[in-house]
Structures are given as structure tokens and as C-alpha cells.
Image (cartoon, rainbow, N blue to C red):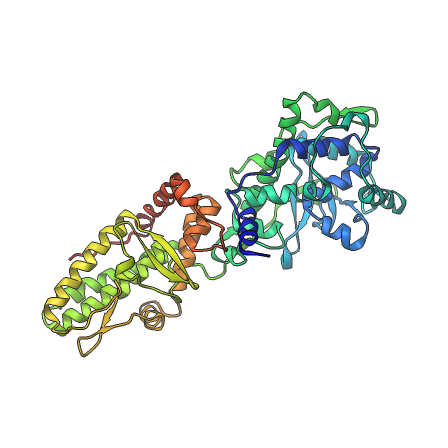
Amino acid sequence: MNRKNIEKSNRSNAAGIPFPLTHEHMQKLRYWYQSKLTNPQLLVLLLVWLKQDFKTVREQKGFPFVYRSISGVDPERNCLRILRQGNVSWVEYSIHIGNRGFIWIPIPVALKGFFWRVLQEHPSYEKPILNVKESCALYDFWISKMTRSRAFRGIKMANKTVWSNYIHKYCQADTVLSSNSKSLYFEKLQHSSADAYQTEIIESNRYQLFKSINNSIDRLILEAEKWEILSNFERSINGRKVIPNRHEKLAKYITENNGLISEIKIDYKEHHREVTKTRSLRIGAKGIVDKSVVIHFFKDLNDLLVISKRKASSRSAFIYYYNQCTYIFSLQLILLTSLRPTHQISPLLAALSVDRFSVKDKGQSRTILLSAFLQEQVIRYQCIQRKLKNIMHCSEKSPFLLFLVDDNFKPMHLSAKKLRIFMDTHWSGHVPYLLRKMFAQTLMELKLPNHLLDRTMGHSRLGEHDGAMTVFLYEEKVMLDALNKLPGIFKIELFND
């Protein structure tokens, strides 16, 4: 694959790209609804589509056996259940979340009526919805060449492979779906380690996935309504006509906590049933500390700086004060810009401008935007440096913004090792990389769109962001608005020059 194709492929897999075409996918969905598939066969096909699990179909040369579970049983592979709350019932399906097992996800609103009616007609628990013969017939139908009826002649629709990946592509492009949520749903993230910098409770992941998948289905139903062909999605189930409905009344557990969907567990007792919510799991990065601890850490550093400045009456004492400023400023940069502490920590003076600078990061140039706080901090730090130069009689100069001064009053490179030792001295057992994780976690909580969070973190593949900030200056403003909130959140103080 040549360079241009690699760049195109990377752009097509990134968050923030255009959503998949609507009309062609709607027509393909319409084709499945109007096919000769039985209702249980269509249900299994739609379920595999929702789970984006056609890879399993290809490998096993057959569709998986899908079961209806008792509502009180823990989720297992290829299971569905009906959950009743008050006078509203909802259907949920299980998805795999790696070594943590399975979780329940609510069926999209528009498909709820169809799934619920079909399951009502299949009262047997732990028995496959399709028998072997029906499953083989569905697979033969899936792999056979599409036969167009007169109603579909001349209509452009997505091919089978593209349609199979529709929900995957939609969720991949969704900027509000977090990396943690995507990591539950996709086998591979665009940036493989992106979810290692953030942590969320499973209730939030469940809500985000439900909302994103639901939106992907809604846009197809809206397209059918626009073309006044929604009646073509009608299915007859036991004499009842069922049609996709975007306005189904939602079950209480889906709406009661904004931004969260709890997993409901039902235990059947002798004369009643006991409804409880399962204990929260936390998905994603490990070792992220509470913000209050980070705030306290920087407060202690600031107190240390006040004492050092008060004692900086001699040349050696002032140099000690200056070195403390350098260490603290570098830690502030990591927390407020997500600089990688294991790569270039300080920008070259030649690469520094008023509101941004660039560093060498993983072998390529990376632009760092400076918040209003950091712009002022740079000015104050350089003012301290000018005072330092007045007392240092040394012709050697450092090309970097940040540098230390040794016992011989000569500029000394600020290395990752020195910074790590400094942090461990003042916060035992912790390393500067923790601050980069805290940066990502905080911006995620501030709802910075996922593709912009990737960009601020320096996560990118060849060609992924080509021209983006030049063409979309609004996105730079969105990033800066979020960055400007960080100093206040962590109560970082300016140097008193």
C-alpha cells in the first residue's frame, strides 16, 4: 500500500469523519425486511448486524445460535432477554467485553417492537430461536447472490460487505463515543492505547453505546420516513403488524439517570421478584488518582517554591529556586498539554511562538496549543531566566525553553530521568506519566469530542489530521476552550516573578 492509500485509510478510520451514506444503507435494510426470511431469521440477522459480528459468521460458516434468557440470568454469548419495568418491557442483547465477560445492552428504540414481538412468540428459554435447518437456510440466503424483485430494480443500495460494517463505521466516526466505549465494541481501536488514558464506569459505557447505535438506526428510519416508504418495513407477527417506531416509550431504567444506564438484575423469590442494580465496574486506565490529590500535590510544590524564593538571596540559592521552577513548570506542561514525559519535554526556543510550540514526539513534529495560563507562565518563567543570566557569568546557552543549571553554573539538559526523580521525591511512588493520564481523563469528563482529545494527546497516524486545523479553525477554538479550563480545575498558580 502506497503512502496516499495509507493516509486515506487512516483518515477513514478516525473519529470525526463523515458518517456512512444513509440512503444506500436504508435501502439495503428495506431489502432484508421485504425478503422471504422468517421473522426469527430476520431477528438473528439484525442481531448479528447490531453486534457487528459477521466475522464469526464467516469463520463458522453459519449464523450463531441465539437464545432467549430468563431475565434474572447473567448475560452470556448470543443471548436476548425481555426486561419488564412497570408497564414497559424492553429487549436487551449481550455483548462481549473481553476478560470481563458479557454485559446487557438495550435494543435500539426503532427495533424494540419487532424484537419484543418475535421473542414473545418464542417462549422457550435456553432453546435456540432458530433450529439447525432454519439457521442453515439463513446462511445460504446470506451467501447467495442477491435477487432483486421488481420493486428494487434500479435502486442503489449498499453492498453486503459495506452494509455489514455500517454500525461499526458510524460508531467509529462518532465524536462523542469515548475510547473506552469503543474498546468494548470494536476489536481494534484506531489508536490502540487511547483507552489506557481514561477510565469510566460501565453504566456510562452502556449509555454511550446504546445512544450511538440507536442514532445509527434512527437515521435510516428517518430516511425511510423522508421517502415515505416506512410501510415497506412492516412485518406481520402472529397477526399483528409491526413497523419500526422511533417514538417507543422508553423503559424507566434507560432514562432515570442522565448519561448512565444501569444493568438490572432480577432475582425471583417464592412470592415476589427482587429487582437490583449490579455493582459498577470501572473500565479503562488503572492507577488514575483523584483530582484532589493532584491539586494537593501542586499546592505543595507551590508552597515549596515560595520558601525557595524567600531564601534565594545568594547566587547558589537563586539557582536552586530556578531549578525548582523548571521542574514544576515542566510538570505543569505535562498536566496542561499532555506532553509525553518520556520524549522531548521542552520545546526549542526556535519552535516557540506566543500561543503554541512544537516538539519532537515519537519521531515526528507535534504542535502543542498553549492556554492563556501557559502563555502567561512562559512569560514569567523567561523573566526568571533573565534574572538568572544576570548572575551567571557563562557564555554557554541552551537552545531549549526549559533547562537546569548545574553546580558549575552551566546549562544542563532537563531529562525524563531527572524529572521522574524530582516527582518521586515530592510524591513518592508516582511518575510524571500519571499527569498525562489525568489530562486525558479530565478532558473526557469535559466532553471534548473524541477526535479532538486524540489530537491533544498526540495520538495520530500518517495523514490522519492532514489540513484539519487549517480548514476547521473552529475545532482549534473548541480545544483551546477546554485547555483554558484545566488550570482552574487543578488550581495551578502562576510564578510570582
